[in-house]
Image (cartoon, rainbow, N blue to C red; front, side, top):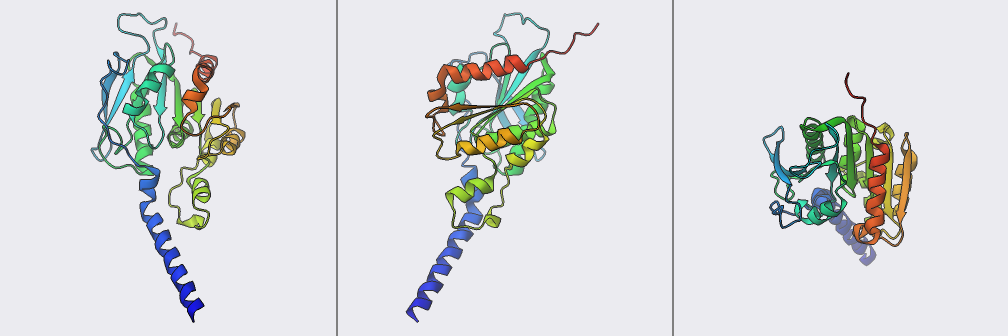
Length: 285
């Protein structure tokens, strides 16, 4: 009798834990740290321009546009390439401002937008709303004066890899850069909660499927010591890309220190990929 009660108690506890994880998985995947847009001058980006995008439900998204050239400098080309930057799930523009300053590619317009519920944006982060925000970011950059819509690149780190891959799979892009990409939400959940059945995971964030619809060049960067999203996930995504794909491993880097460990070599790898892949359209006669 005691063993039966013990088994029933364990089962009840398992059901409670499973139910809680079912209910809070959006919050686990999208912790949504709030923060106002930083002062551009203090962040070392005095030319950063605040932008606002509007979602279909009226939610306002806050972002930054970093122009291709500083004020007063005449661009070499009439139009410049553009890069959309999608950060990780625990970040926002305020926390990545210094990274943007160091990694900002020369001669390229950069757009970064806080996801719904993140940073200075309104709303609440869910998978569909993150994808909608990503689509709006692409449309904003593709129609921005001075940006060539045929030369738009997307960069996504960790959770941002799902937004970036979504954009590359559904829009015309010149190249896709993924840092520490997950294969899918279910695969990550299986590592973190191996005792739970996969059908409890409502989120998809399925890069492994989305990458099969991406035909532009792909650069995958992953830390060899990543304890959150193992480098094998990056390898699998690079292998599944139907177009040209390059995998670069940062030796000794964990999930949240790739910028520090990779340093200038990592930055130069990204810049070289952009330069190598950027093929301007012929000028109109």
